[in-house]
Length: 110
Image (cartoon, rainbow, N blue to C red; front, side, top):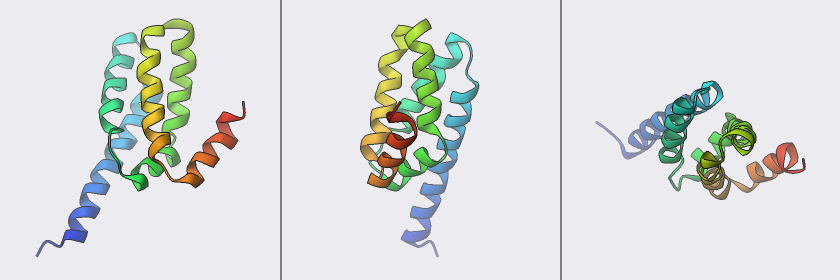
């Protein structure tokens, strides 16, 4: 017997695992090709309307990882800036208000 709730939890767990992989890849992408690949994957992974999942993405460090990539791109790879900003926007526009405040307090005030 496969309940709708169990299905929802399985999907959420799968998406959470994907988010962890993306953040890990963002933190370790060094070459141009690696960055392009992970940013394309991030763009796809963060394109959803699940507030809890966007909040989870904040909690696991996606904003921090993207902010570091943004700083690098601004100085070395301007063509990647719009993709990084789009990823940031998708997460921040979709997460819970308390996470937006957390991000502002940790990063935005700088």
